[in-house]
Image 1: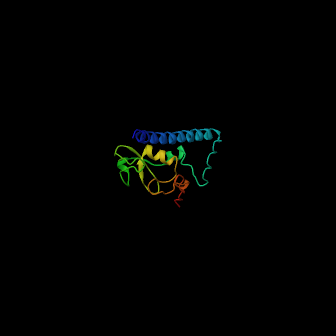
Image 2: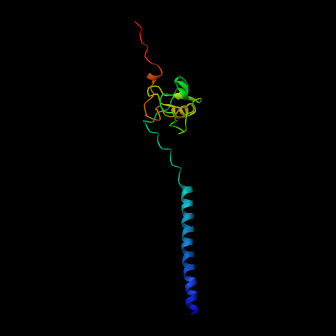
Image 3: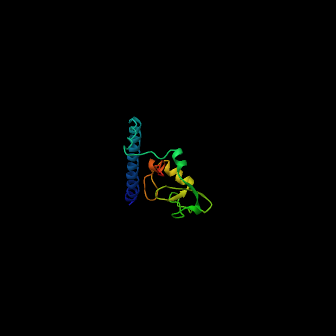
Length: 133
């Protein structure tokens, strides 16, 4: 009986110890292999990736207050309400409005409207002159 108690306690402990030692060896092997590997090069930049608007282009976009916005009272960038006295920026063409800081942060990285994805191109900054004749 004493032998069966000994085996019932010893065998599970020995088995778990063996599994633990194998795990530690695998961790050491993986750590040594990571140190010997060269660093991966940076992934290439997508060809279709565009840059946002410049600060001078952002200044050309209309600034209004929250009460002057035509469409919606919520900023689609930060999802917060645009108060009537807060400065806002309106995207020409689609007339969607956003907090001034939110719009500038978004448009400096993406030259499209955050709501409708309308492109904000150079034609919106330099409208064609109409001859009064």
